Image 1 (tube, helix red, strand yellow):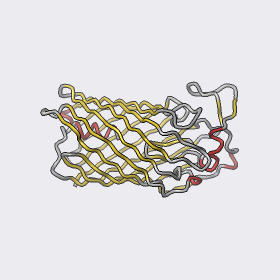
Image 2 (cartoon, one colour):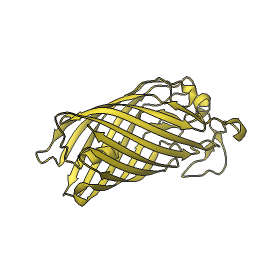
Image 3 (cartoon, helix red, strand yellow):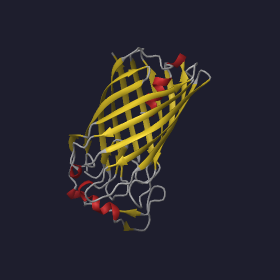
Image 4 (cartoon, helix red, strand yellow):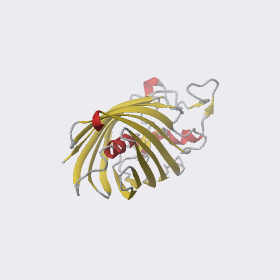
Length: 280
């Protein structure tokens, strides 16, 4: 999302009065989180929207393949809830050692021979909007409001969603520096629906990205940071850093690729993906 907004900003916001567009992405993420078994997740997301001088609105739905039901998809990202065993996420067992970062606790949700799960299912759809609040005369500086809602169509025990509504709102700021750099900061407050056996804290998500353009803006490299406040009690909130490469094929077609590394136990260890968008 952040990379896509940076790519849009690199055009100076030069859109027709109304554009209809399709965007999609393929993302693979893997991590053990704070569980004893590793989860691999594959996400195929599709979005259809409308954009114009004042902002954009779009509808998204992901197709998800996972080898365990322990990681749930939310509008603000993936979350290791434990799925059908979410009650255990609030009662973590103390263990010696650890792994990445400051992790000191793990939960055993099942042995290797009991987690032959690997299923594909649609995740919860979501509706998002971006409204431009202010832009400088030179279009170098822009401030926008962001809104989102996730609609709970999946069962929380399936491992594809939390079974509750997620509703969020926030603000973003983008700044063009000279003719080669773009910077963006964004923050959103999310009201998260609780699961039957696990309370999810409302949280503030934040992101920052810096882009460097080449070849008159056709190519752009990005560096980004994503994180949030605590979502599950006694679980370190997710924080990730990443890098990406974007390519503007034409005024209508954009391509991108990205890689993310998790810095805390509730973020995936590693993820990689590709994305595209087409204006009609």
